[in-house]
Image (cartoon, protein in one colour):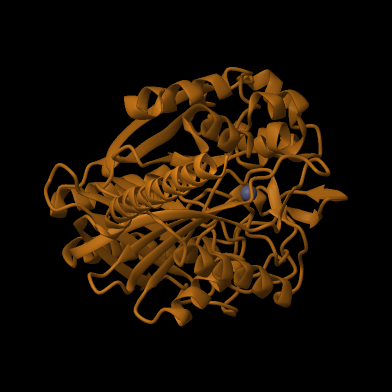
Amino acid sequence: MSHRNENSKKLYLFNSITRFVQFIDSLKISYFIYNQVKKIKMSDKSVDMIFDVGVSQADITPQGPIRLAGFAARVKNETQAVLSRLSAKAIAFGSNDENNTIIIAVDIIGIPATITERVVKILSKSISIKPEQIAILVTHTHGSPEVGTLLNILQCRGNYPIDYYFDSSPLLPEELVHIAEFNEFLLSKLVDVATAAFKNRTPASLSWGNGEVSFAENRRTKDGPVDHSLPVLCVKNLDGSLRAIMANYACHGISLGPDVNEIHGDWMTEAQNLIEERHQGCIAMMVIGCAGDLHPLRRDKVEIMKGYGKNIADEVERVIKSDLIKLNAPPVVAMAWVKLPFAAVPTVACLIEQSKHSDIRGYYSKLALERILRGDNVPKELNYPVQVWNFDDKLAMINLGGEAVIDYAFLFKKLYGEARVWVNSYANDVTCYIPSLRILKEGGYEGETSMYWYNQPSPFEELVEQKVTDTVNDLMPPAFRN
Ligand SMILES: [Zn+2]
């Protein structure tokens, strides 16, 4: 027993040592594989694709007295007071005629297609830009001037909302001249900022990431749908410093109300200014998501507005320090105009009948009758712009006109993948709210009455959501349609 035991012990010891050595070897192999994978991952992250990118900015603060847009209940006086200055900022991508694109973010309530088209027309001659290659995105700040006749109808008289009293000449002639002057000033600044960004393109890298900020709430329904995501696009110089930041959040710019008759960019400008303070030489642009039915949780104080701006800037700071997704191509663009039919086109008899009411529909009817007498027609449909800009298969940026409601953000994120979709609204032509089928059926402000405030003849037909969705799908590259 003792001898055999001795041999067994030796054999056991030998086997144990062999297994231990094998175990160590396997650890070494695992460690080697781990290191190789890590190196591949690290090299993947460290490789920056370099493109030509230009940035530019211009001050668009009105230079004289002007009526502000945004609230029916606002006082009816012009203002020259400036709480915060307004700006237009541009990023230009690409280095040849095929892939040149320009995004402009502008601190203003809305943009009519007439201005966008004039900008494109001028740029088409100077730098060969086509309509699909430019996106003008407004921040929808309610502290900005009237643009064109976009919101003329909002200039009601009387004690809103208790007693509507409208006037057939809602703006004084000199006020109209000031609005016209601002329109021309804005147009020239948009052309200037796009041209400057285009001309100062130099090598840069692009990346994006997603954050979260929680101050937007659904204004129609308590605890209704909200999208708190904060997508952030980074343009970096070759030394790694920031050249531009573009961030998107879905929330109305109404942390200050109609009692503040001073020019301001609301929480969007506060966020932009803070980001730029923290990163000298960097241009910060806020753009707005599908915020038609979303507004800030708290309102009516300058400190609240500044606080929300800081919330955005702080989260941008966190996102840009995280592992961002490298973009390996400048955007490839597609655009379509889809006809969104109105549910009813009122006849003259119908407008006369409606005009007897003292509400907004009655006021709209009076204005429509006046236009018909001048030879205009009541439109049957809205011509609605949709763009899809895809950065290879890493990111699809959808630009929707009007004030799209939050359901569209969820719809497109579900269809094309939350991790690869970025939805901007308030793009290129802001003519009215764009309700989802749900909101259209529910009615209320965004589905129904806002149409008259926006000078439209009736709510949309129920096809509206399907038509917008089909148009986006037609424009979306196959890589996102899986
Ligand atoms: Zn709005």
